[in-house]
Image (cartoon, rainbow over all chains, first blue to last red):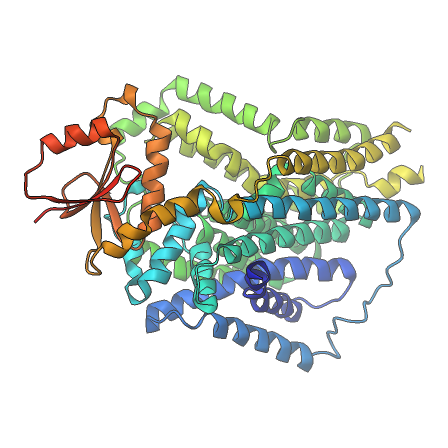
Length: 460
Length: 139
């Protein structure tokens, strides 16, 4: 029962997100609707988190979480009803007809979905409080909110030991505390359901985006590889924010890719909103905003159109403003930069042993990423060599812009390890695998968006 | 032919990896963890102490074996985990390492407990919650 309630408590936000995105970006081809449903999960929950934060800040009451969600859902339903003729959801504008190959891949995907649901529940049931980070950071902060009620600001006391990361952004903790306030109890199943929605959102978004840019068969293959990566399914019930961040990284990358293809400003505005929510999820999101800004500048240069900055700026404005307020007025100093001196920074930057250790750990973690018994990277590289890359010439700007985002984020992580004040070995061991996971779904999107699709392979 | 085989292997390989992971993890299944995993147990262990803390206490000290014993005599990861679990269980009370607060939690083995006690005044009040957990109140 508590598992069901955990899922129900966030359902209005997820549906509202999908409905609102449908109003902003018209069209009801199946692949497009899958993208919108996937986007809706993260953007709906993100919008709820931002509004709930404002409610706490302005009124200092915690009871409004459900009302915010229902308000958003009512708005989404009202707009969908009002625009049902110009912008219907059903019937689909394209008839779904599958070839024999696609039916086989769909069956394989169905089997893996079934297995993944089993894996998810085994993990969830045996780890009701999630992983170490969940009870150290996110659920602990949620407890400060829920148990503290009107004294919720205690969660940002500088007296809290640095390891608890009281400066971390509040996306997840607020939504968990909001769910507890709605349910009237500290239900860990709600925190797990939040992770499950992100998991579902990533699968739908990745598959929808690959289907939209390539083919149905390619999209099913992408879904199979994603769900076949053990660490990915394991992340759902871990109740940490890495999965949520990987959702927003994927969402931003997909939206920017779609923008260069469709040139619809709303896609860039949504990319701005998604990247702002990435920073509202984890501190790594701040680096991500920088990476996305570089990509936008690159697109503006390639398209000879500086105006692309405007919708992106409008999209990021709301989450960015909330985050800025949080960082300036509430969050204590970050442990990585609180005691940094120029001398120690210089020492770390010129220490070749640090470069060597970080580099070897990066290689090791990337090759063996996924908690699998085989190297997923090696499998994907061999697959790529066999079926060959087939990027579309018209999408080159999109490929380059998205690759730029991932590269900047990747090298940014490298640079942060270089200057970390903590024991480098400990820092790498406890975080690198999660950082790679944050980029994995977006990397999979780029991979499958640029590869020869199975339909073409089997047509020969 | 090679390309077709690659597609089939990738699809089937993904299913096998997913199933492998599921079986591997399902074999560790223990229904006791559903309601009594390590974190829930620690929450229960701290429940009595939490109830005894006056409502106006906002910060509390914490002394573990790692504050008393040499590094060779402790398992750092266990000490760290228990400290984190204690903060999680007692939130929103802030747990500060050290014994500078009026209220202090001791999570000490007998050797460390005896060493710590030697440096304390006689009039402190200590409540024993079992399993090496004590609550100290300095007057």
